Every structure is written in structure tokens, then in C-alpha cells.
Amino acid sequence: MSIAIVWLRRDLRLADNPALRAALEAHEQVLPVFIHHAPDEEQPWSSGAATNWWLHHSLKALAQSIAQAGGSLILRAGDTLAELRSLVKSTGATAVYWNRLYEPAVIARDRQIKQALREDGLIAESRNAALWFEPWELQTGGKEPYRVFTPFWRNAEGRLREQLAQGRAPLAAVRKLKSLAKPAESLALEDLQLLPKIGWDQHFYTAWTPGESGAQAQLGRFLKAPVGSYLAQRDLPAVDAVSQLSPHLHFGEISPMQIAAAIEQLLAENHAAGVRKNAEGFLRQIAWREFGHHLLFHFPQTPTAPLNPRFAEFEWRSKNAYASDLRAWQRGETGIPIVDAGMRQLWQTGWMHNRVRMLVASVLTKNLLIPWTEGAAWFWDTLVDADLANNTLGWQWVAGCGADAAPYFRIFNPVLQGFKFDSAGDYVRRWVPELAQLPASAIHAPWDAEQQVLQHAGIKLGSDYPNPIVDLRETRARALEAYDRVKK
Ligand SMILES: Cc1cc2nc3c(=O)[nH]c(=O)nc-3n(C[C@H](O)[C@H](O)[C@H](O)COP(=O)(O)OP(=O)(O)OC[C@H]3O[C@@H](n4cnc5c(N)ncnc54)[C@H](O)[C@@H]3O)c2cc1C
Image (tube, rainbow, N blue to C red; front, side, top):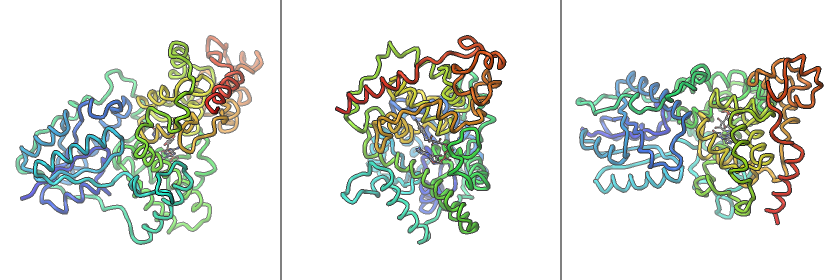
């Protein structure tokens, strides 16, 4: 009887899982395995604290689904190749299957593992489960990787439509797995020590349901109503208008193909023009994720170096000079309400609304002149959706040094943005409760409010809530000068 190992990583689902399906088609028994790799394998981008929290709960959910299907999820920790070899030896497996990932260190590790396993005489095969298209499948007319989103999307969208019309569809869920007669040794989930030792994660439990069924429920909720007003409301952080699928997508609890198919289905049932426009706008957003992976694959240096090499010379402030400002930013104590609201939402829930991510990143890189890599590192540790491709794309876009980046002179004014996108002030009130009594007209710039208004709201600036740590107007001018020097 032939046995195959399915090495699960960030494809924590039973539906639309090509590696699992390939193993089941070619072998009588399949052993699903998760290996918590040794920290040095994915350096310097081993998963952060918030994603580890998610991983713990996602593995728990997956183990339950696998058990319901009649199998059992084997957990291991340590050097990945050594663990795979030990499992091969103890079970007599003749093949190992997995789904591909695209971070540079992971690609290098996986390549070595594939070669080593093949040299051992095993079948070692990988599949695409994370993207509509492999990063090497899409090219410009000049056979180059894309650096600009719109033509990338035009190409991807055309092909996706064509393939959907030709019947490309997500793979059905695996419902039956057989346990091995002699079970392989497994660690307990707790042995992986993924949960934080200090209980800063309590809000995460009310905010999220990690796992494949949590992901499907989230998609269902989004497609039921918010998708219909996605384009008009996706920039409003106080409104429940976006999908919040990002951590589910990061861990592969749902695939972009499943989302595209669900949208096709929705559009087949609902012919309203508004729904089509909004649903397509949503798919376009998922394509930014594809674009991020395309860029990371083709430009693997970008998690630490600007894609636009001119920006390597950019004069950031020195670490000594910015250390206390960075701390204030991380803690949500900058005195700029929408920034503080975002940073506190991030700390408490592991997620921040996209519009606010852009604002906090703009204040960090432009008003505070702190390197974007500092912000990316903080996000890496605190976001439940921390994703090397998307995080690098987002930070370089805002800093103005990436592909298709915001032009360097686009410096968001967080006060105007606050009044525009959180006009009633509800988002700030929710995350910065000390400002909750301020009227909407004052909430995004309390330093401009009359003393009487502040008094009435029970706020003394400087003690109940900080004065802004930067003068937005002066630092805007300073940033423009610094960017001008790079331009020359
Ligand atoms: C500075 C900065 C850092 C970011 N870091 C990350 C990160 O580490 N991980 C991450 O998943 N996203 C990141 N983003 C992108 C974006 O903010 C999140 O994907 C989005 O807020 C997730 O919420 P949602 O699932 O409700 O999005 P929706 O609006 O519902 O979009 C659906 C999906 O499309 C993808 N998507 C949407 N917008 C973007 C985008 N701009 N770039 C790439 N993919 C996108 C995501 O997978 C998202 O789940 C970052 C953005 C910025 C500006």
C-alpha cells in the first residue's frame, strides 16, 4: 500500500487543496503533517507573535476537520527536512506533496528539500494553491515582470475570466481520509508554543474565528451584503464594509480561486449592475495580493531594500533621534487621533483598516522620517494578516519607493483624511475612548479646538491625551525637501 505525506504550511484547508488532492489521487493513504520549522529556516521572517496566535487556532480547527474526515493531523517541530525524513522512515511513505509559497527564504529551503527527497528516491511534488497565477505565468509584452498594477490586472483579469468560462473551478473538499494502521508520532498543539505568554491577545478571541469554516463564514457574511457597497464604503474605517479575509487568505484557509468562484456564482444569481461593479472592485483588490506576490518573487530583495534603487540613499532620521517617536507611534500615543486609533486597533485586534494603514504609514515615513522598514517590522509582529508580499508592497507604496508607488509628493494629511473618511468620528471614538466626548468637528484635530470644547469633553491635552508629537505642516515640508534630494 502506498503512503504519501502532505506537508501543510499556509494552505490550512481541505477544500481546493491541490497538494492534498494530488496525494489522494495517487496513493492509498495520506498523512497530513504540519512542521513548525526551526526558527533559522525562514529568517529573518519567521512568523510574528500575532500570526503565531492565528496559526495555533487555525491548526486546532484543521486538526478537527481532519479528524472528522477520519484522519489525523501530525504535528512536528524542528528542522523540516529531518522531520520529513523521520516521518518517511517511520511510516514507509514514498512521496511528499506540498503547496508552494513565495518568500525568498522559503523558496530556497523548499528547493533544497525537494532535491534532497528526490535524491532519497521519493516522489516530491509541489502545487499552486495560493494564487490565481504563478508569478512567472504573467509577463509584460516585453517579457518582463510587471512593476505597474493596472496592466498586471488587465492581463490577470482577462486570463481569469477566460479560465473560469472554460470551467476552471476550485477543487472539491476532501471528505474522507484514512488514519495509518500504526499512527505516526505527533506533538500536542501546545508543544508548539505558539500562544503568547502574556495575555495581550484577549480581544483576538472575540474578533476572529481562525480556520477554514471561519473563513467560509466570513466570505458568506461579506457576500450577503457588504459587497454591494464595497466601492463606496471600503475607505470608511468605522463601517463594516470590507471582507476582513486577509488573515484567512494568508494562512490559506480560503483560496483566491474559491473567492473568484463565489463571486461568479453571486453574479450569476444577481444581475444588478451595482453588484457587478462592486464585486469586480473587490476582485481587483484581491489582485493587489497577487501583484504583491508577483513582485516579491521577481524582486526578492524588496522586504528590506526599496524596489526603486534611488531611494537607497534616502536620508531617514537616525535611530537615536527617532526612537521615542517610534515608540509613541507603536503605542498609539502620537496625539494624532486617527493614527492613534489605527495603532490601537492593530494592537488590540491584530488588524487595521486599509485606509488607516496608509495613514499611519504615511505619518511614520513622511512626517516622522522613520524608515519604512521599522513600520513594516512592527506590522510583522502585530498583524494577524502579516504577509511578507503584501506588507512589503503596502509599505513601499506609501513610502513612495516601490512599484507603482504613491508619488513622493503625496503626503496624506491625517487630519483632512480623518474628517473625510471618519466624518462622524466614530472610528476614533471607538479606539481612542479618551476623545469619545469630543464633537465630530473637533475630533480629528483636538489641538485646534476651543478650550471650552475640550473642557466640556473632559480633556486636558498633554495629560488626558498627548499633544501631537509632530507639527504636520512643518514635517510635510521637511519630507518634501528630503524626497527632492533623492529625486536629483
Ligand atoms: C502599510 C501597509 C501594510 C500592509 N500590510 C499587509 C499585510 O501584512 N498583509 C495583508 O494581507 N495586507 C496588508 N496590507 C494591505 C491591506 O491593508 C489589507 O490586505 C487589507 O486591509 C485587509 O483587509 P480586508 O481583508 O478586509 O481587505 P478587503 O478590502 O476585503 O480586500 C480583500 C483582500 O484583498 C487583498 N488586498 C486588499 N487590499 C490589498 C492591498 N492594498 N495590498 C495587497 N492585498 C490587498 C487582501 O488579501 C484582502 O484580504 C497592507 C497595506 C498597507 C498600506
